[in-house]
Amino acid sequence: MMKTILVLFGGCSSEHSVSLQSAHAVLTHLDAKKYQALPVGVTREGRWLYYPGPLDRLPAGDWQEDPGCIPCALRLDRGQFSLLFPEGSREALAFDAAFPVLHGKNGEDGTVQGLLELVGVPLIGCGALSSALCMDKDRAHKLAALAGLRTPKSAVFFAGAPRKELAEAAESLGYPLFAKPLRAGSSFGVSRVSRPEELAAAAEAAFREDSRILLEEAIPGFEVGCAVLGNPGKTELTVGAVDEIELSGGFFDFHEKYTLKTSAIHCPARISQEKAAEIQAAARTVYTALDCRCFARADFFLTPEGEIVFNEVNTIPGFTAHSRYPSMMKAAGLEFPALLDRLVELGMKP
View 1: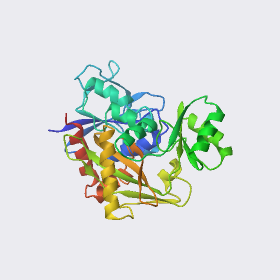
View 2 (view 1 turned 45 degrees about the horizontal axis):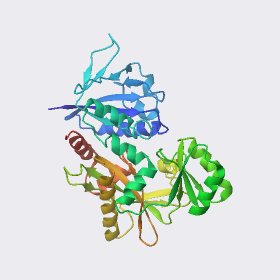
View 3 (view 1 turned 180 degrees about the vertical axis):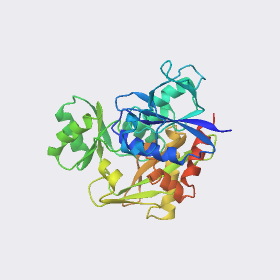
View 4 (view 1 turned 120 degrees about the vertical axis):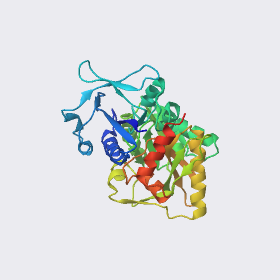
């Protein structure tokens, strides 16, 4: 029996444009013989619009100008999964599950997941608690450490923190270090701080993204990642091939993540099979510790001494056919359409 999947994209987030790219890939690769997609875009201003127009308008960003767009809202009666429309515009549209393809704040941070869980909608992805924890770098690190993983040394500050306190913490952590918003994705607001005189501007950039920031020690080595698939306690966790980010300089900021002008991603990573297996085991551990389900990508640093240091978990990683998560799963033998089938299957399990 064909299932109708509500696919949410866009969002009130710095990563709005990235979401459009991911959603385009998901919508064009869902098996039309098995699923009927129900595309709903959230504008940068927060309006929900049912979008029945051509999918090729999504990457361009002008989808909301399509005359077929209709304002809509989620029906909040528990167990009644449908979209509601202004009176007279059209009848309600029912669906079977929801797939939030939303990156960053107001989509990947547990807000939308909480709304869907309130209604009881089967959710393709991590739940509200996991999404919120993984977005919060400090709490994610604390839980990862309790699970036995090494995490970077760090210090948290609220907006308005005295510069003297920031400077003292930075001196204790040592330079270079990173200034990061506590809750943001795609490296928005993240700066590498090499000298004390750079600290104030870096903290200000981080505070523009969040009311709390993190000063974090720089870990030598390079970044590796591992895709995880499954529901802990209910299904055996599947891990993808480990990948490796090669940098020519600086760090893997938003510009580099989506242009790769001076960096490269190697999948599988250029490391031993034994070390890759260690990273995969660490990914399973932190995925379970942070209450993830369905899918997520765990990122680590690999030091020159071969030590694995936890960085973060992305609960809705980039999802174009060439993004890191699908590429890791493809290297492990799971092609993109089959991966989407598996995600829907996992998301619809109780």
